[in-house]
Length: 315
Image 1: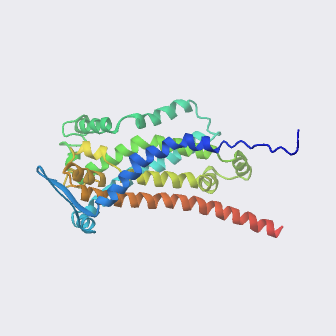
Image 2: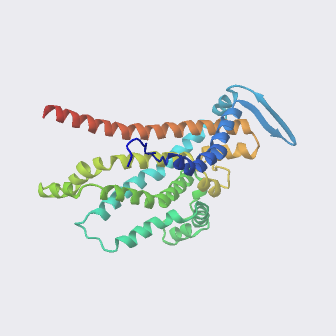
Image 3: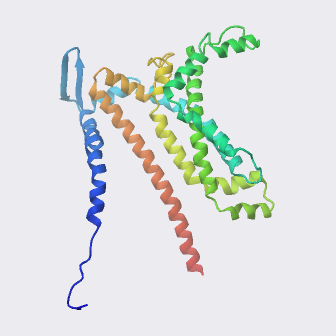
């Protein structure tokens, strides 16, 4: 080979850009541009009154001020309460099930069957779930009939006419739909822990409780943070279950009206300015939660990296 000849380097980078271009084009058209328009119109008076369209007229932060005065904070509180009712038992039950299914000492038979069963509610549409619970817990439904026949109640309990009864049903449905998914995630996290750690703990005489709190929980902390934040984002977007269960009214006394139900009312009434303001606030909250996940995980990596450097210096 002649040394004077230059060998051409073939660059395949352009082909990578070609393959990822469709995603960025779709993202630009269907997400980024609508997001920019939503933020833009949140500072305008823009709604439909009958057949007449009012605006868009710039009003500054008037839409955001009107949100606070229209009970926005109350609906945010409703959303958080119903999310907590479903999430607290969800994370507790999921942790227990994940610890049981991954413990080789228990030798549980039929693990695959139980995994499929606990995950199945996640495959059911939320609308179907809400209709099922509406029929089960109505005044003349099977639940009230059973409680009366057992002598526990003397008259039907109006689940859907009491504040905490309705909130409890929404929380129960969210728990049943999502605890299987959370269990699978936590099981994957536990199975990713080095088995030598559990063997060493067993040889040192650690009890199952000590092993769980001293080894399992600290090691799956990143997944726990991920589950917490994604669940919070999902909770902020809670819509279909309370919408169908309360016939879009948020009854009783709008105690189950969520932020997305409030947003939907403004979209239905063609008040684009107010709907944009609600969307922007939700976007900011979700962005803060995502950043919290990012910095939490990076903080853990930074701490472990710093410890390794200190050990290297000491050595």
